[in-house]
Image (cartoon, rainbow, N blue to C red; front, side, top):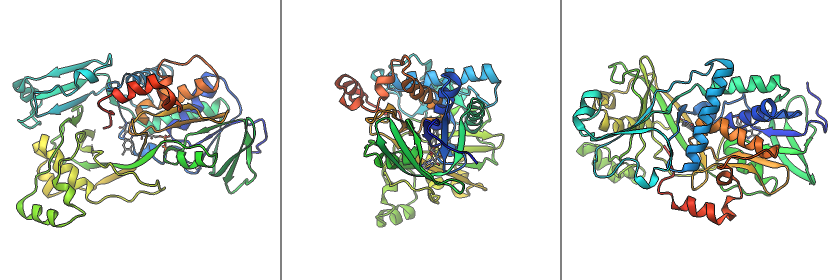
Length: 426
Ligand SMILES: Cc1cc2nc3c(=O)[nH]c(=O)nc-3n(C[C@H](O)[C@H](O)[C@H](O)COP(=O)(O)OP(=O)(O)OC[C@H]3O[C@@H](n4cnc5c(N)ncnc54)[C@H](O)[C@@H]3O)c2cc1C
């Protein structure tokens, strides 16, 4: 049992990758003491455990490229210090398209130093990537990209933070108030302690529930939460090689249906959308020696976040159908889906422009790391570090302005944000 008094002045709500990274950079790197990290669940068991665990330094927005590029460097630094305990693999990303007319990444969107390589020679693509459809005419490779084990990364950061004095507490935060300047009270529900906990710094890292927590303090965070999914299946036919990079279809896809299916779908208003063009971004990668992982963030409907998201039984069928458009070897799996199938459902909690909110909110002492959307694994370290730098009034990196929660009042930043053609979501 812990006793809490006024000395415990920094409370971080949420032990997903955002809260854990913030706790790490505050305590280990910047030496802050008296930090309590609270989560209702086991660390990283909400959105963080649903991640596809991919990273890349290419983004259409320069600020996002800088944030993820720096986060990758921070992860490399952790490996230098502790060894490769989170299995960082630079396996690359490749975007493929059937079209030659426009570059997959338009000139206007190429604002980053990321090393990208184009191949527009169909015969070379055929020769080097025989599993791809013959219709693929353009392929772009991002080399500073790959996958990590985010649970192992978070475990490392949490272990080091706890060694530096951070207290991890399992409890549900049930209310927040600010009875005096620079003072907050955190109400929580735990079996062993029910008194409100006072603190002078409060950090909201509650993933899909950040908005709800901020509301208790009359702060409005411009976030929406959209359910997205991935799934893992066996690959009994060995269609996907274990060294295939994370492969993304850059084209929109209209699914193939036979005549009978088309008639059924068009007669049913709930499913008619499956006859329409679905957005680009379907992705697939080898998950282990004989398993593959697929995802497609085509859902655009925001929902009120819930703690449990039911599986979507249609999702795997839709995705495998789409994937067979650019990897035809997967077609047999449209007829007979390999099992066991494991689905991962979580929210992309995001701002409209898909940039995160990191830093101080309008009440002094209140901070957030929010809106990590589909990029919290790859940017988690840099996002936590940025919040910690704000809290300790350290020198801030150039991208801090773009992610500042009050950026909406900054005309120059908003002009730049509004000029971007793509929000980079995958
Ligand atoms: C299907 C899917 C695939 C993804 N793939 C990738 C990918 O390939 N690469 C990538 O970079 N990112 C990916 N992401 C995004 C990434 O997973 C998230 O951005 C990241 O996990 C968000 O972390 P978080 O700490 O902000 O939120 P969470 O992990 O949700 O953590 C928030 C924590 O706050 C706690 N909490 C909330 N309310 C309370 C309360 N009242 N009291 C106590 N505790 C509370 C929760 O229990 C939770 O543990 C993916 C996301 C999804 C859904």
